[in-house]
Structure formats: C-alpha cells, structure tokens
Image 1 (cartoon, one colour):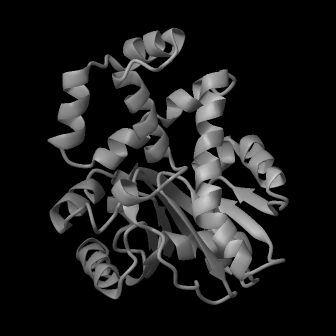
Image 2: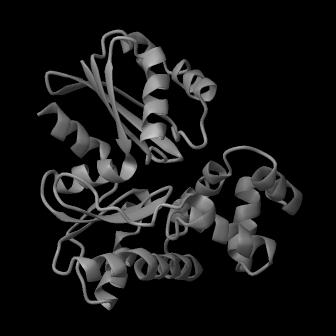
Length: 280
C-alpha cells in the first residue's frame, strides 16, 4: 500500500492506494514543518482513524508539503512521519514540486500555485528552477487565500468594506477588532486563520467588491511572480494549481489575457493527478 499527501499550510489531503486503486482518503489541517512541530503533527495524525487503521500497511509515502523547501525541513518532516508510519519509506518534497508534477508530469512548463499560499517557478520536467519566491504569508503569498483573508480583515478593521459585506462578515464570523488582533498576533497558525475566510470569497464571488479584490490580488501576483518567470522562459506552457486559482479561474484567465498570455491548465486539487502519477 502507498500514500500520497499534498499539503498547503491550511489543509493536507491524503490518498491511500493499493494496486493503483484508492482505498481510503482523508484531509486534515496543513502540515508545514516551519509552523508545525513534531508533537502537533503526531497529534493530528492520531485524530485520523483512517490513518491509524492503515499506518502499518503503508510501505511507501510521497509527501508534498508547504515549507519543505530545504533538506533540513524535508528530513525533519520525514523523521516525524516515520514515528507514525513505521514500515514506510517516506519521500518528502515541497508543495511546488508536487504542483509541477500534477500539472506537467514530465513535461516542461511554468507552474504557479495560488492556494493557501502562493509560488511560481519553471519546471524542466525533472526539477524546479531556483528563485527567490516562496517567502511565506508575512513577506509574500500575494494572491493566495491567506493574502485575500488579510486584505479582507484590513478593509473590515479600517471600515472600508461595503456595508452589506461588513454585516455578513460580522454575522458569519462574529468578528470584532480585539478578537481579530488577538487571533492574529497572540495565537499560533495565523496563516490558517487568514485562509479560513476564503469561503466568504467563494460565497460572494459575484459581488463587485470581491471581484475587484481578487483581480487586484491576481494582478499583483502576475507582476511579482509570473511575468518575470515568463520573461526568462518565453513560449512555455503555463499551469496553475490551487483552490484560489480553481475557484476564480475566470478572473485569473482574464488577467492572463490582459497581459497577452494563455493559461494551459488550472488544477484545483493536485492530489488526484499526483496519485495517478505515482500509482503508475
């Protein structure tokens, strides 16, 4: 039996397969070695009955996780998982590599992530080209769900949100200034809290203010990440992966058209393609 895991900072998706067929699946909070220590990861694993039931049967695991960008972090996460999956060979790579494989398999292309985080890089069919992106939710992640959540709360706190959206946000999340600041600055996993507001964007996707926010976020992402990568690799196919790209692909394709390029594929949930790739 094998397992494939794709984890952003918000959610980790698990697929367990045998002879190419999925036999179990689950999701859990994201596993990011920069934010989750060994104790917290093991606690999350021990809450999933499906993983407990199959832990000893899994012989190989492919894990693609946000934050697993250095060899130290890859080793750290692999060592933690080996305490739970004692009989498994565990291969850890970062989420950008997983996104590239899910979108391109072994073909070349430019791959962007717009999920709970944001990233972009050129994939030569085997490995990602190094760049200076991937700075996380404080210094980067423009266009991601945590970035959109941050902008939404900023508009809310500064009373620049339209009254109808403000009323709905207050009712749905029971928000006030002290609670928001407490959650952001004094409690752990602020990036997961910020990403949790993405459902609000989906529910209000036809609202002109929400569309404007999304368009501005995608424009910023394009300017900072995508256009410089396209300049280095002109003519290459462009692929996107992630829930933000998937849910707002009409807005994303519109921004792309504005800048004179086309997006080849948009994959909302890469776990399915990854399972197919590594099962064969």
